[in-house]
Every structure is written in structure tokens, then in C-alpha cells.
Image (cartoon, rainbow, N blue to C red; front, side):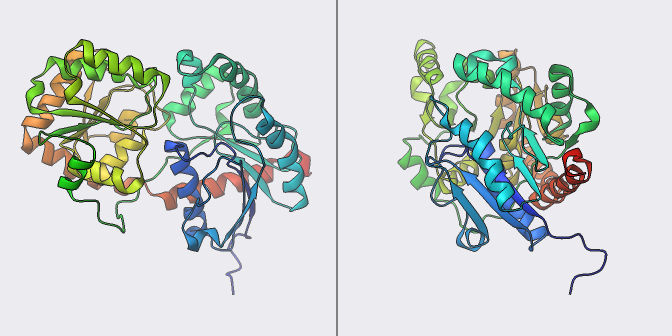
Length: 389
């Protein structure tokens, strides 16, 4: 029997129509939030709305049995934007019919005319600050929809204090409406990563130390500066590994590596399974994130969870996540990036110390805590929802 002070179980609708196999950080957020909610409040009812392009297996069998999935018969992205009609029209109607308590859009959008209380997570505003990262049609749609959804939502979630500041300054949203809920990390992986030798052979890597950067191949991730930085150091004793789904920008990065004469030391890998990515983290000598802006910077934590020493930009949310467990550099300075790489590769005492600090810092970021804070936001949205009064 539940204690009298225990909160009433919620029925939640999650808008996950954006999910595809290569959803990167947003996909990890969606999967781990669901798991966390069901651990923290097992009686929660979750309905997940996805598109036809979402992976068939979103969660493990134990979680899948506890989540109702509504799959719309259209892809979650693209043009014509049938997915938006489903999100904005059909989703709130189905949610109301299922008598859900709250609708949560995990990637910038919610149905703005919903009579059900709504929460929207605004992951970042890079499409405003770095418009070249997105096609014009998609960028224009976001410029209309994201501010509209943010103002219509009962509560907004930002995934870092830096992201909340950016949302307030850029979208002119009331800071009191925004809850900061950091993402989390799992330190224990139930499956051992592939042997280092097998991974090196599988991906054509040499025996040299691996500098790993897990980031979307888009302009604001600043991978071009990372490649130039690698070219400026002794490239004979290290190699740069760049996993991630191919993008139009990747051809520019490949051309840059060729022009600098380091193509054989820069490895462009495709989107990888979680198992293979775990293996890359395990064999990396260091992890580098030279991004100009991050809503959170989840790969920093994932590197730290593998005891990999981290070097990252000193801007946006990255110092907030990495704390005293990273080397920092100005992302506009290729010299500083290169110097940080050299220190981590050649100063093993420093690398081990940062690896230890990073691993300990992971204690501050758990998916269970993300779930608790998100559930608190749901209840706040329900209590503040004027349409329910």
C-alpha cells in the first residue's frame, strides 16, 4: 500500500516523433528518461508517440512491456511536414482520449493548442546562432514553431543553466517558467566492450593513440578546427577518430584533412552501435569536444564514465558539465586545442588524474535524478495549467 504522502501516479504522453536510429543525444535522452521514470515511480503510465522512422526496438524488453507506443504512419521529419500535422493535431486528441495528465515534447515542440497540460524541452538554439547547420526550410519552420511552443507550454525544461540563459536572452522567455534539469550518465555497462585489437581492425585504426571526438558532423561542432589542430601537432604519434552519421559537412571535413596531408590519420566512422561506441571510449587516449555551443554536452559525461580524460571548449554549457575534470581551451584557437591534445596524450599522469576526476564527477549526474526533476516539472505544469481550472 502506498504511503499517504506519496504522489499520485501520473499518466504521461511523450512526443518522440523525432526519433530515428541515429538520434544521437536526443535519442539517448528519450530512452534514459523513460527508464529513469519507471525506476523512480514504477506506477507511471507512459504513452510514447513515434513516427514510422523510429527504431522498432526503442527500449529493452523489460521497459517495452511497460510503455504504450503509438506509431504514426509517417516519418518524424522531412517535407511535406505530415509529422507536424500528427504532432499538432492527432497527438493531443489521442492523448485527451487516453486521459493523460501531461504531454511532454522532448525535442523543442509540443502541440500548442492542447487542452492537456504541456511541457517542452528546448535542447538548444544552435539553429538560431549557427543557421548553416540546418536546411533553410527546416530553420524557418523552427523559427516559427519553437518560440510558439515555448510560450504555449505550461513549463519549459532546459538541460543546463547555460541553455536556460540562452533561451531567456534569445527567445525572451520568462526565466521563472523554465526548469533546469541536467541529463545523466550510466557508469556501468552490462556488456563488456569489444577487444581493442578487434575494434582497431574493424575500423581500420592504427596502433597510435586515439583522439576521440563524438559529435554531429555539423559546422557548430567546430570539427574543422580540431582537424587543423591535429595537423599542427606531431601527427605521427596519434590519430583522430570521428564517429557519427554522415552529413553534407563531412565532405568539407574530408577535403580539409586531405588538403592538410593528414587523411590517413583522420578516421571518419559512421553512426555506431552503443556497443562499438563503448569500445571506442575504452581504447581512446583522450576525448575532445571543440564545439562552439552545446545545450548540455552529453558525450563529455560518457567519456568520463569510461575514465577517458577530457579536453573541451570553455564556453556554453561545457564547463558546467565538466567542472574541474577537464582541460579547457578557447574553441577559436587551434593552437590551444592542439596544446590540450598534446598534454593529454603525452602527460599520462595528468591524463590519469583527469580520468579519475571525471569518473567521480559522474556521481553528480544520474538519469534517476533527471527523472525525478522531470516528474516534478510535470506536476508543476499540471498545477499551473489554467485550462484545467
